[in-house]
Length: 399
Ligand SMILES: [Zn+2]
Image (cartoon, rainbow, N blue to C red):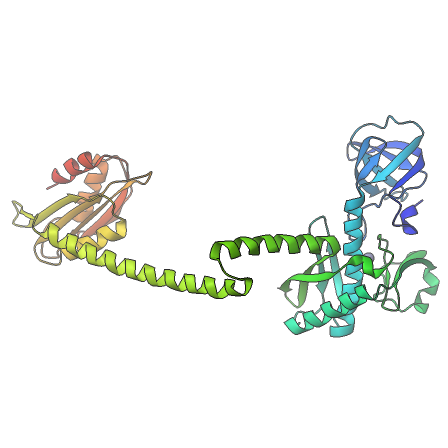
């Protein structure tokens, strides 16, 4: 017997064991009556204990509708079981589920949006509406009506009615399939829905209803919301985050957004200034390196240099500046620091001789790396971990 149908509040009870069986590889028992809610209608199953044994799931057996209490261990307790629900968990699910009925009716009344889906688990609660074009104002209006309904503290009652009499009741939504009997949840004069779930006794117990996320899904909209204790807990988490930001930025809550925008603006400007300064510095470095070119046997002008603390982009910029004058060839390298690997960049003026790609391939081969490539004029590659001295020796052996 489903005692939770008429009483959502009993969390401790004694009932006879009528069957000891097995389900999903776990020991399971059927009770003469039970207040444990089995997974169904979008509401998760209860948890709790029979005696000292944990109830890890509650399921409806499809063959006969019996309610199976899946246990963490074999039942050792005799013919009578003392059942205890995990009440904080059940209470949370009751607050969310009644909140959902209220919210769904509120959307129907204020936006003619029908609820076509409902998902509830231990952390998240969503409804799917058959309209996607709801504005922020539409959401706020529905949320306001939902909370007003909570605060009116309307009675929430359950009734069993015969299917044949169903048309007498103004249901929010007609159930999709036939049942001999139907359980209706009535929320005062506000909502009437067919539902098998567990609900609070008065809307005031839902506490509050807060929409927290909206997501357009084609021509539908998924809304995530929080009720009661979940909403309060989420509010606490948000305040903790805000408190951290307020302390970090030494501003009031209202100042957070402008403060962060200002910081981001300053950061962008600093990055621009840093980039300009780095370019200027590279210009000076190029100038200093220009004096180190030496003539080659082929009549070109050659520079080989291993430069620490350089990025590949730095090397490219330096090489471009250094080889702007004919007939210069620059063979530049940087060596890896702090776990990074080394990089080579070879570039020549178009009027200088030599095949940079071939030289690069030879150098990388010496350094034990295959990656890299380019053209006769410019080539690059890296990935080696050799020391600066070793790299310098390889570069000077190339031409
Ligand atoms: Zn329901």
